[in-house]
Length: 360
Figure 1 (spheres, rainbow, N blue to C red):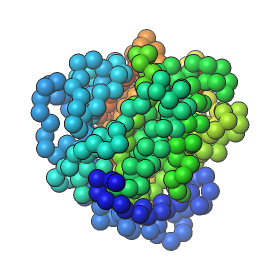
Figure 2: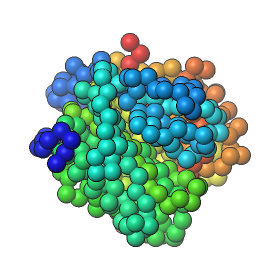
Figure 3: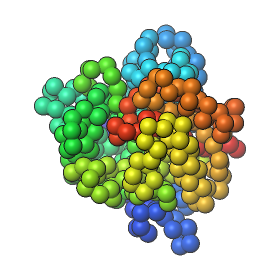
Figure 4: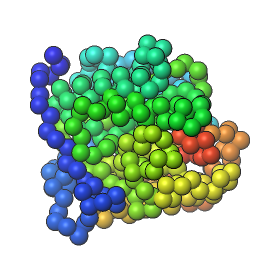
């Protein structure tokens, strides 16, 4: 029995029925945006803030995410074992709008306000026979939990596990994860995929860490005109295509962009050139912001103080190069956190994910 009682989930609205570019703005007003316009002021707010390890969280924090060593875990807190290369000591805060309810059910730690829920789940690979099976178990648990809750719409996920590029060809661990994720969601009716980040760590814990944002209303999945939709990738990238959307328009005032790398079409660009990879990523982010702005004009059309950026670098030595590429493009007040983490393709050296919101 769920903590809220049995609830039959509403089906997701497919936002990609106009092709891989997502919703066509020349058609009639999208019903998701009409429905969610009233939620714009209730969207979670995101920020980076310095918190002492033992400092109590404000009552309106939905989730606090710390990075690296010396991070407190527990109710409404999660530690991601990626070392901060710039921004050490920063905590990512998801701020609720209204009272927060917390609990644990079937291994999922959760916290929610009236409109949105944050969930956290960790699964040990050794308990399931490998990463593919662990991913399947994790996503089955997520699907069962969310489908029985008041928040049946999966909007955004983050996935972290060790040795992401270990293994050759279809034996690569990232490809194993993709196969397991699809298997875990197979019985859950979804008509669009959430935005997602998948990054490799180096702790050698062999634990899949998953946290997510879900809502009572569906978002609007968006694709990038510069890129082939990940779920339509050709066979060369694995037996199972990655199942995520390039971005999720949660409300007209909140856009959550997936982990974005130096990929145009479906091909990796600028091999062995970290600076050019960073610049290509920024072009991809610009493209997504423009698409989202055409649907929700309150959103920023460029990166800046109304966007929250997280960068993942494969090589510590590339930090000055990535910082320089970002500084030459971003306003100085852009919230930014740089972490050491491995990208899903071995040739890719850097990845960015982003939250954009209306500044009011």
